[in-house]
Length: 156
Image 1 (cartoon, one colour):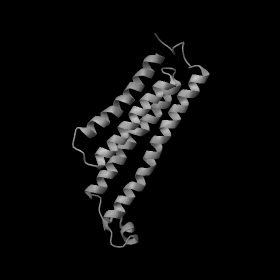
Image 2 (image 1 turned 60 degrees about the vertical axis):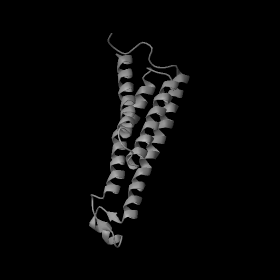
Image 3 (image 1 turned 180 degrees about the vertical axis):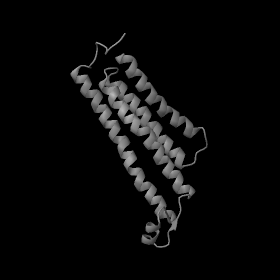
Image 4 (image 1 turned 120 degrees about the vertical axis):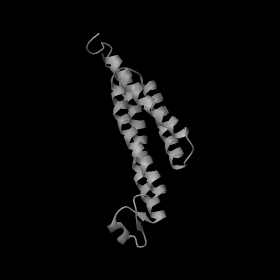
């Protein structure tokens, strides 16, 4: 069929609950993202490695390098979070307001995704052997694809 499904939108109370779940879990993930910058900075300070000349002058004894393996691992974990969490936040709100699901589904997908992202960070920084990192990445990716497909199928 074409057009928007006649069941849209959710009932007012359910819509609010779904949005509340999306807001709650998005906030947890945004806090995770916000803490990563300081973690990378702390790692640079601890290892006495900076990325810019002016930082080396400011932090006496620091070496300018963009290839320190420990710093780069934490930086890559942060970049990977940005690449996955930002799309999730957009999708979870679309998922919540689309009428495709109830608040319980929004919460469950959010819990699975958030757990996968925290596991991904621990195994990435902790250098846990594969496939741990790949599996945690895939769980998050499946959550994102699932939400997008569910919304599209529901609305059209």
